[in-house]
Every structure is written in C-alpha cells, then in structure tokens.
Length: 375
Image (cartoon, rainbow, N blue to C red; front, side, top):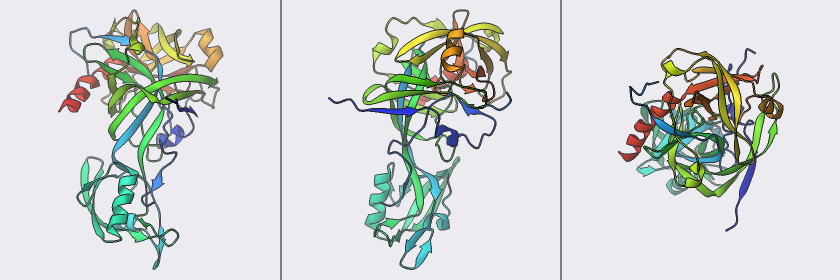
C-alpha cells in the first residue's frame, strides 16, 4: 500500500479561522479543507488563540504529547461565503436572496440529506432549476428556506451561489488517553472553520500517524509554527466530538500508549504557581519533556478555557522553537506527578508565554461526548 503524505504548516490559514478574535491566536491545529479549499455549491499584549470539577474521585489518564494528523468531515455542509451567479437573465444571488448566511449549515435539500459537496452538486443538477426547500442550522436554530438554483452561463451547471465546505484536516497534539473510557482528548480547543471562525460540526473523523519535519522559530510579533506530515491512510483513532474544550475520540492503535503509565488528574485547587513540565513533539515522532512555569491560575469563568498562564523556561525548547509555537496546542502540562492541563494559546508579542486549559475541564467533556456518541 502506498503511503500518501501531505506536508503543511500549522499556522497559515488558521489565522483566518480566528480573525474574529483579534486578541488571541491558537497554538494549535492548522485547519485546511481536505479538498484544498472551499468550493461553490455547483460543479506582550496581543495573543495568538489556541469546567466542571469531577467530584472527589481521582481520575487516572495517560499523558501523551504526540503529534498526529487530524481529519474531519462535517455534519451537513458549512456555508463559508456567498457569491453571484451569471445566468441567462444576468447576475443573481440565489443563496443570498433566499436568506442563507455565512456560517449556516445546510443539512437537507428537499428530503435529501446532504453531508458532502458532491451530494449538494448532484441534487442541484437533478432539480434543474426547480424550486427547492433548504433545511439549515443557524446557531441553535433550524431554518427552512426556499431557493431556486440558476444555470450558470459559463459552464451550464446549476448553482446556488454559496461557497461550502464539508471537510478539514491538519496536524495537532494529543493530550491524554483515558483507560477507563478508551477516549482520548487533543488540542484543548475546538477546530474552527478557517473562513467563518465557527466550530466545525463533526459527522466523522480520525487521527492519523504524523511526524514533525521542522520548526519555524517564534519571535515577538511573529508566532512560530511546526511543520509536519501526516499519512492519510494510516488511521490511529476515531473522532466523535469537536468541542470548545478540545477534540475527542477513541484510539484504535495501542502503539500510541505503549510503555506509558497513567497519572492522576489535578483538580483546579491542586494547581500551584511555580515549576511544571510539558510534553511536546517538536521533531519526528519523539515526545520530550520540557520545563515551564505556571505563572497564573485563573478563577472559573463559565466557558473561557484560558485557565492557566504558562512560561517556557527550558533552554532546549527556547533554542528550538523560541517558546510556544503553533502546533503545540494540546501539549500536556504536568505538575507534582499529575496532569494539570494542556497548552492552548501563545502570546504573539512574547512567545515564551501562553495560556492553557485545565485537564479537568477537558476530561469533563469525555463522559458527555461518549454518551452522545452511544445515544
């Protein structure tokens, strides 16, 4: 079997995904369309983005820090832009005119469920310009719209005038594996669409074997990034949730946890200011431990996952990367033999510092997401 590899930087298009959040940049996954781009529905101060307690029982998980490829396919198709179509009667914008907006998720056209670009295109050609009902989700509301595709003068295809996306891929860092549930957590933040900055709705996805090829060192005002490659035909786990606290799934390849021991998960009250370490994969597929300092623990704020401030102090990591770079999001933070959290953000004007999410916040998602998957 031939192994197909894709080399790509973490940063690039990710900056577009978070352009609405002007003060922060994820230290995380480069998010790309698997098909290369969206396609039309026809043929020091500034930061760069990257809570619930468990109760009295002590949770045990395996900290990972391994870089993996992540590919995901959307539940429905995401509208990432609107455009005009030139037909026999001139220019028109069917998608805009019917009420579709950027960020809407189209789930059905008439009675047909659509999850891919190809399905949408097929339905439009079959209707040949007849009026159709579009079922879409906007935020937490379901919309019912009526539209009529237009035959494009340029290529004769029926088009709606909407740019849509159905898949994304990139490389990120695994945070932990939970032996009790068989689940893993990664990134410490969700995967957002690069055009709308909205959380990508997950239909299916997987993690793949990946290696880190090289590093662009971070400097003040210019965040660094890891460059890597992933093998699209070597799945190591299945995704089942994309949330604001991370992406979650189940492992199918035990080699990721070979020889690794579980550690307790620290509660918020146990996290102390001072020395800690992070596990990161900044070269090849080797995970190393690096010294950091926890400089602040933020009080719970009901939804804000920037719960820790960390500073890189390890000379090896500072020399190799300049501190925290994009691609390190999800790197586990350890203190006093316990998993404290994961790196999620890097400060643009000071790449030696960044934010993290508490491990208990990420772990709180795994029972919910597993239950949702089973049901």
